[in-house]
Image (cartoon, rainbow, N blue to C red; front, side, top):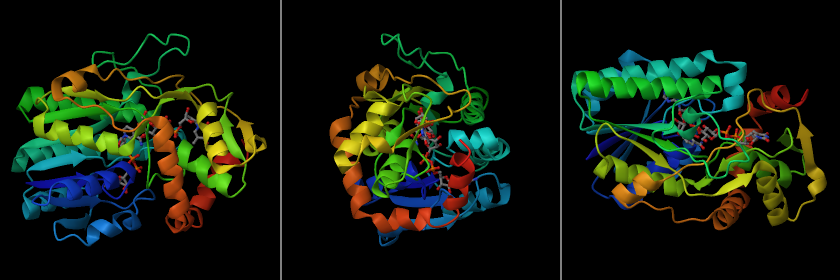
Length: 339
Ligand code: NAD
Ligand code: DAU
């Protein structure tokens, strides 16, 4: 089987490339990635040694580049991770989110129609459901929760999901969609909460917590997300949406304090800063459908996964030091200095 992983030089896509190469030695895995600020060839170093892996630099919002990918590689499966993924950046600059997340998805879908495909899988997010009240811990997102987005990022992801469903209904394209909660683990770009806090704490820099730190996220170790997508592309029902999450809800402050404790740092590093505009309060996934239909369950509990993640950042300093010494410096100054 030949699988194209778009966005495979990013956090989750990179982990998925490694997961699939380790699990299937007879599959060809092709990473198609534009190498934006979030794409990193160092993430793919190990994969590049494999004879079953190929990297192609390309942009999903460029018709020519996408069509030549299909003409040359004739993939059986597309797993679309490629996206602009950071909510804060979408608040400052929505345009590129629409271009990549919506138009890029449409261009991939059109290529699938033109050249044929066994399965197109869209990697979506629980953010398309909006948020849940913090004080209603009995409520969870199911696949039937209405789409109700908050940020330009989540609106663009929801737009993409609706297009994927339209191509299923109108053209019969064999699609599946997964909507996962917050991931964490190796190769996570240090603009996102967990890696940002680990990297800042290691450098004894302030830890910028938005608002009071009482927003809740439902954390999933990235390898568990990869195993869920693997199951969906092989055994998921065409046309269906699957939620992915493992009931690991934590407030942001709890997460930050856990990282501080693991690293032996002081809570004085915590710096409460101006809240994110439109900040979603709580995400929480009900994963019953993927559990009962496909037998998926997560393997890693948050308390173990966070330790493994911190260990990875301690052992792979050069990976993140290369990032924070480059353009990221300007981003950080713009995002946090006047907060
Ligand atoms: P990321 O920002 O780490 O990586 C995105 C990758 O896509 C990068 O390698 C980047 O170079 C590439 N890319 C961006 N624009 C592109 C384009 N136009 N053409 C080709 N490649 C392009 O993102 P991530 O956190 O790994 O998220 C991957 C996917 O999973 C996204 O679709 C995101 O919406 C979804 N998701 C993320 C999370 C999470 O917690 N990170 C949770 C649920 C769903
Ligand atoms: O739920 C899935 C989504 O999770 C994905 O679709 C997104 O791609 C991914 O980025 C993530 O979105 P969040 O907005 O939840 O993740 P982020 O790491 O940006 O923020 C997590 C929480 O931490 C959120 O409540 C905001 C808060 N936060 C974040 C940063 C970067 C802070 O308090 N301080 C910070 O500096």
